[in-house]
Image (cartoon, rainbow, N blue to C red; front, side, top):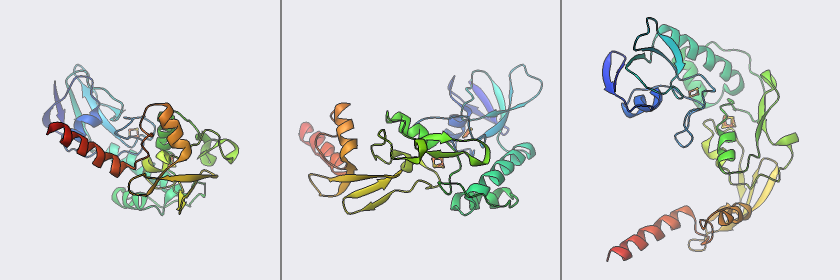
Length: 246
Ligand code: SF4
Ligand code: FES
């Protein structure tokens, strides 16, 4: 399917999102709430682009991360209107995370005006929702978006240690602004007001996961049973493949 992006013809797969096409073709579109593991959420609106599909007389604005390409279209990824939208989004998010390197860089790039800062925990959070998504994907849903407006923030219910949190830190790994605090010292990890004992890799001795996470994973497959860290698991796999091929 032929799609024109910024005046140049590209080949799209039917049903893929505008963002996927542009990423594949090396055309930059900024995103906050998209992650390649989960796809787009359409929440932050940072990826807005203009599209004029076959038969339409006027272009309209859509979120590139969730908009599927189903027919011939012309797409514009940079325009005055798009810049204005992105500048406003960056300006508002910089109130919550103005000192974060990502927001600092984007504020400069879009010429966003400086608004008075708002302090909301976790500091630096831009409410992209990726951590909530990651936690739900792990099958736990220990964290949620609480309150509304300027008070909106990500937290466990009542800010208490949640029985659902297994300390895997998947939320912290997907966070684009490193807003989620994970403290690790020796064999202990602290996250979301909860303390976990860490288990060491049976081969290299490195602390790599919480007991709760390994128990959960072993109940849902054999992933955690060998008690190997990711590096040793990969080495193990490579060794097994090599042995099998000999
Ligand atoms: S804590 Fe990080 S991942 Fe979660 S909503 Fe805030 S910025 Fe996004
Ligand atoms: S990245 Fe598309 S709406 Fe957030």
